[in-house]
Image (tube, rainbow, N blue to C red; front, side, top):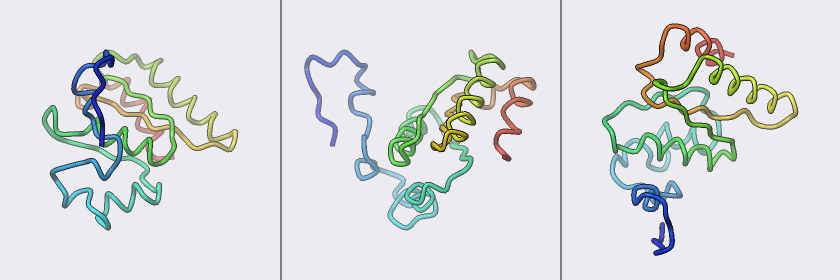
Length: 129
């Protein structure tokens, strides 16, 4: 469980964000032991996941937990502000990591519904490889 510290300057939501799968609460049918999502996380076999829901429902938290549990680098971007070059660089970094024998990275795209056609054209081929 997350403990609050008075000298922590992070915003409150960051300070109380669950750090382990066991710390999650609500929506147990989605992430509980032996659920499809939990099995994907525990076996590190998720290739591409799409989380849909209103703000504050845990999408970012779940992505961070998956990154932590799978021991993968997690990079977060916003579709609103990320350039095609940014996305291309992140994909290339992940492929380079893989070529060196390391795990691929996780790219968390916030506001994914706002991706431009050019951003989609760069991102989508990486999802099917």
